[in-house]
Length: 226
Image (tube, rainbow, N blue to C red; front, side, top):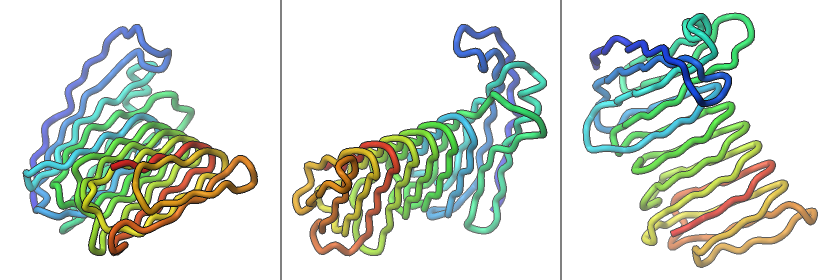
């Protein structure tokens, strides 16, 4: 599969936002991906938003931000396209860094997705394949439609809340655990029990329970919604 590349657009500007966002650089690249690629995204700092669409392409919009132009140059975005697998990764040069990258990525709706973000929010919507998301510091918000058959959803945050919305016609076995945090759900068949006063564990089955949903946080609330 072949894609096309749009040269990054440099937009250095004074910024009234945070101390570490004095300059920005825009990045855009689109790759032909087929209808059901496996997409992996690895980010260090900054938000990641992924949405499913009807096109057989992966469309990457990113905003690099930092304290100065030198810091921006040390942040690179690497994209690899190998067969049905596409990887998108933030890389840093040597030294201390205060900048990051915000991603907005469209993927084919039948794609499978694996996202790792060290510090920042992850939002996923409209993706019908398997979804795995991990953050060390940041919230996870996912709206994944019908979850059934052999589909797998695995959302994990070290420090941060998780909110998962699924369709009412889903069939899935659910496991959820927060070491320090609460669990809430409007989905019938899911029961929760307190653990060690400050933690909670929940489990249950939706419909036939054919798919698998696992939600876990060390510190943070978990919500499961229709």
